[in-house]
Image (cartoon, rainbow, N blue to C red; front, side, top):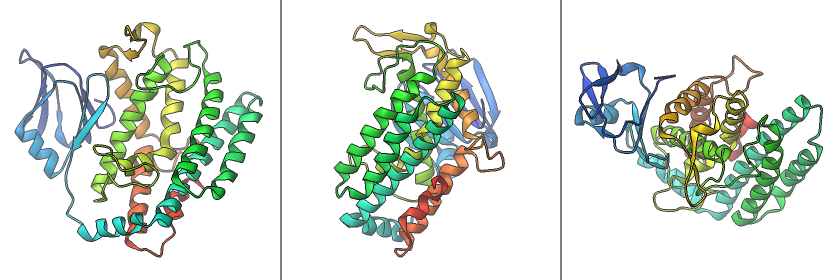
Length: 334
């Protein structure tokens, strides 16, 4: 277990509550892990892992949050404490987001915050490489300027998509080794870099879903991402400016040879996935990053996890007070 995160990917394993401790038993009944419950903030369950009723009751009353994923890392949902039903808060959220103008404004702020973070990261990469990314920087600056001209969600999505493609072209030049990365691809990922990015984004999404649910907001109603059954659109909206955290974590670990070609498998259809035994290493690296400062140049600043919850908390205040500017929620990325 690292940074308050317990991950279980052993198929047929079960999780039990024994007094004030959480115990993971293998399908053979042998205890694999036992830790104090108060030290665990999140439990990530991959594939066929059984959770006993006492653990479920603990999760519902005080945590940890249980995140359910497929064996290959596709997010299924979570169970966590309900801090109190806030019907009035959700009515404020619905009222604000049902107005097309308000929804468009929030979507624009989400994309603007994301583009600011991408621009900051690319400028940092360019300085470390003695330039060489001027074209990408200019493109991102121009894309940010285009946002004010967009009058539809689709228009904003188009600007964001084009900017992300340009960003990933620059991103691919950061790798020391050739992993066959030529841009972002998913469903399924076609190379090891995209396999790690997809899993990393899934873990980031699970963190944001938990943050939104703990705030009592409706995680399914967002602005930039359309409402879709089973998808937490608000969590996807708010995680957009944080995606670079996963991007840089993947570069760092792959350039340090934390992962090798043998850690991945390729399916007959060309899809590339992590070997199951590699998941704990990914979880550990992600968990450590969540409790590290969001910005390396600000060691006393909020951790990634704290920053995510800070943005959600501010957004909640924006929904409660209709006269507040939606941009307040994303000041962290100004």
